[in-house]
Amino acid sequence: MDGDLSAVVQAAKKLALLAGTLERRSGEAIATQQRAAVTLAQAVVDVRADASRILEESRAEVSKATRETLNGHLTDRTERFDQDISSATNRILDASRTVDDPAARARTSLKHIFKLGMGWTAVR
Image (cartoon, rainbow, N blue to C red; front, side, top):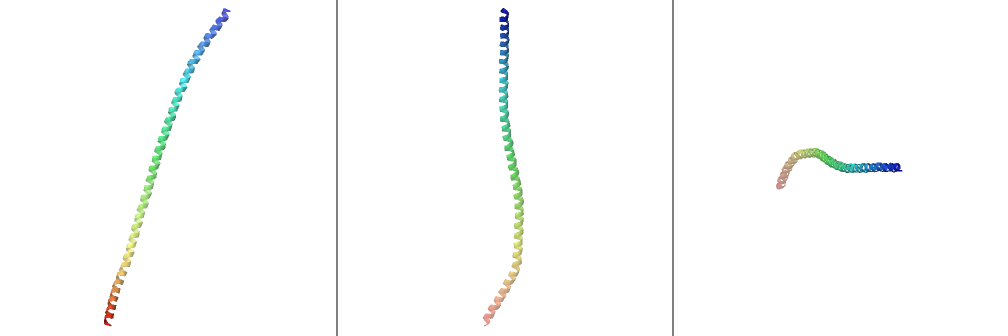
């Protein structure tokens, strides 16, 4: 019976050692998982920050490109509009000069006719 008891004691010692090893390894595994969870959480925070920064930079670039494109188009349109206005103004001035010459001659003729008419009525 002493042999059986000795075998039980030996088995108990082995179980105690296995339990200690299991407890130590379980603690190490838990600590490793906790560090991994912290690292993962930090990685998620970093990715979100990077994504937010990239989106903000993209928005700024799109906004800048849009502004530059619109300014370029508006500048081109404004220059063309100014040229069209200048051209139209020059045509109006040319037309006005074209009308002014005959109008001046007509005015001179009417003054002459009026003077003749006034002279004719004075004679009567």
